[in-house]
Image 1 (cartoon, rainbow, N blue to C red):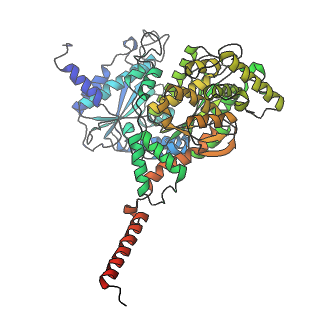
Image 2 (image 1 turned 90 degrees about the vertical axis):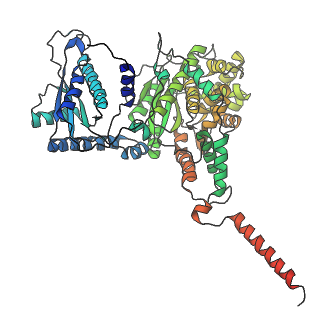
Length: 598
């Protein structure tokens, strides 16, 4: 009886691919009891820890009760919306997150942690297995409903305690039960080809290859860095750029009047492969944080523990980068690739530590080549995660006491400039410290003789873990055709590494500003990038790049929203000149036909 029939496998895979989380399109056709029974029977057939079957299914048909629960969900929606950065909040405003009133019934799936008694097989060391088992039952229910042509939407916009208390008061649900899911169930107008959140641009599906690790973590079918570099080998922007330049000639502004803003639009269109390009929002700034062994050489008066302290400040929302991010509606993420201290988990912190800071680059290579690659892979994967989560504009940020020293060495290595030309005052050091810092950069260059033809070797010898992370971040974003706004000298130095590995990647990069660090100007000139702003900033963190975000957004919006001469009914300059020339010619012809006699 349990043997599979011919065609079962293909049918199962079709159902799996066709399953959708349905939020729109429910109709008022009642769900008959027989169909509902089959769906719940499939859920009840799910595997469970110790065969404890810890689930129960509360079927709610009452419109009055569902209306009350919908009101609870709307309150949670408002609270979630208030927590979002401005651009993300605007995007969220157009999303439907539940259909509690519209669906003809709701199914509350609960977990009873007491089911099976004290000695449930497999639950002693993993008590969460009871709730995990219930999640499996929910999946069974969802798939069976799809096979029965019923839509299901999982509503997570509930405070579980408030929901449980409400159900206790209204229908007598025991308070010791955990609510795992509230499911909207009913007939629908149709099933979308893609998940609603993907269609709305809220998020993308990750390729399976990114999620599969074989034998050791990070061992993918193709190394993420190698895969990224291969994708960048044939990155072509000519079609989109040509379309943008042609479109600019038809816009109701004088030729060239948009200046560098117009050039930004061309750059965005080239990356997108079409004009107008997608609006580059929401934006997110990724602050890569790492410590530096060269700190021991006295190149800065700031103690090394300030790196970890500033990371905590970023996560608490109290830094300059947080103020600027809030101003432009961007999200803030901190990526720990190499902070010397161990950091506690916190919202907004991505733990990607390769090692606890670099070694002193004056004594030997700052990193091994494998460590540099690992940090670059962390950057690639950070870009992938943020883009698949729905970000359409990435912004680079950095934190690391003594990182301008390593930045100076990197810029010197790739541009051929001297230690004196690249070494700035970083956090505002005095003359004596500046002389010592310059000498340290010169000593480092003399020791390693970094060869720009070996960019990974240069990075390992004199770079920082945050430089490596940012370099990977820049490459990963470019491979996904997502624009990145570069911050100051640390980002500029990292961009030199990335450009040496994949020159086409620079099509995705926008210089947000020019910092006062001399190495930054040298890096931008070497990369051929013109800064959008020049405000004498040297904060780092991503601050200057964030200030340029509205300029980048305006460049894309101009191509999308500014009317063309034809659409606006405005006479073009060339057309007017042509009309005048034709009128003059007609006048001359008329004069000749009348003769010269008075």
